[in-house]
Image (cartoon, rainbow, N blue to C red):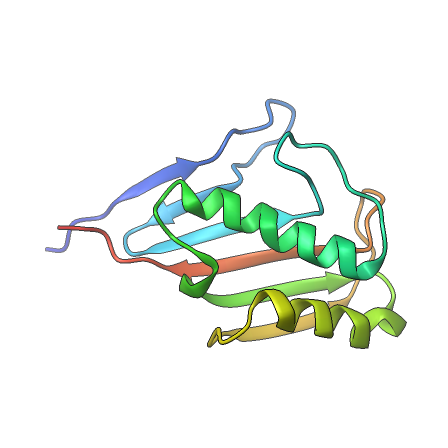
Length: 128
């Protein structure tokens, strides 16, 4: 029987019924993240600025488990305005240079004021 490791990652907002991320075995599932700085303040800017800030938010969360953006295997992006796709894609490619990931991008409006939201799946084997 394989060992199951399951725990929350990141500082949970007491007003929300979920955690920033959850580790399940060798995988880390990152909840939807938006453009926030290291102190948790929202960043409202261009699509490029919000894309980079959102990826950096994911990066900070997964760093708690020793993972980096190179360990990300899947990202789903929710893009408010499809006309921003080309600019978002260029900013995404700059940050994720050389990464091998699967990705889906859909048009969707977030429930808070933001141009973009992303969730991620990370593969980071546990040291056994």
